[in-house]
Length: 406
Image (cartoon, rainbow, N blue to C red; front, side, top):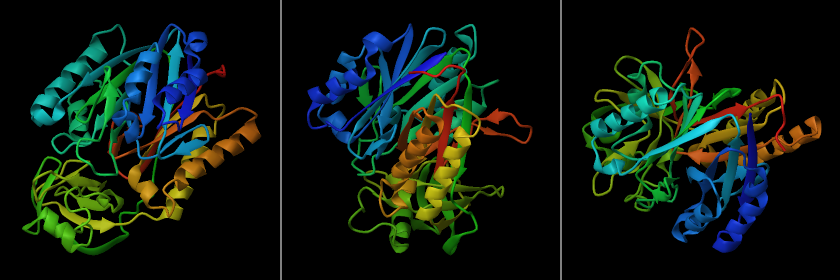
């Protein structure tokens, strides 16, 4: 059985006080069982003022996680905070691995490292992981689609639930992941869960593919997740022409993820695609998924009210069949941008949790973090779970058991 303990602090300007508050809320000396891991989400100041080093030193278990534009946990929320979920068990165990310096490697080299890691997860122990939790930096040379493609080549792959870290400030080198005792802007960290776990996956998206504006264009050059030209025009110039990039964000492309692109690949597959920023020193942009020469691109939009309604639909689905011990939720950062108040979705989910407590008589434990891209299992036509990358979605994994953790 898994137990979940959560902590939240806004004391970012006072690192020692922030760490003391987290330790006081978690009480690891009293609550930690035989096997423990901590999932942490944080704002940029947590990394730059080195609060993370103090937190690692203060907690007697491994920490894994990433930066998030907004952070919410158990009804608390802020865009400048740190949350920690301590997951602990006597009969479920965890294995943490990280691949760093991805920006220095080719996609083929990184894929090779992931294949080795997946093989170790699945065959290095007596059992296959029940789930692998993943946090990856948003990078131009290796996207969540590349990770998905790597997973697909593995026989009987692990189910992966995860997110790509994206700093909405757009500052280079700040799409940060924490693992292996360090913080990196070029890392993928994974936590494998082994044991009997009652887990469910949930996904919702508020984009309608037919709701687009402007004329469809053609991608004339792309490499992996990097968009080089559209209609034979440099990608940066094309986005400027569309009004998506101006002099204010020309160097970083800050905010372009707020406008969804609808991609139609040459085989007819249609997907939502998030563009995350400008490739430094170039006229190129990078996306959260793989692109293709000859694919068509057109832009859509996110409706804030619809986004909030769909978030509540997801929360109702999570809670519809009984007591929830804990729900881990990743929402695309563009969903927050689609609302007039960037915290609106966090507030909506916090309000739902308050209602849940009134009706059920017990708290709804959850954490919410914001991503540049999401990866989560969906059911295929035969009803089996398969891994799938997502954009502009809200995804969740919920844990349930016959016993309620205190």
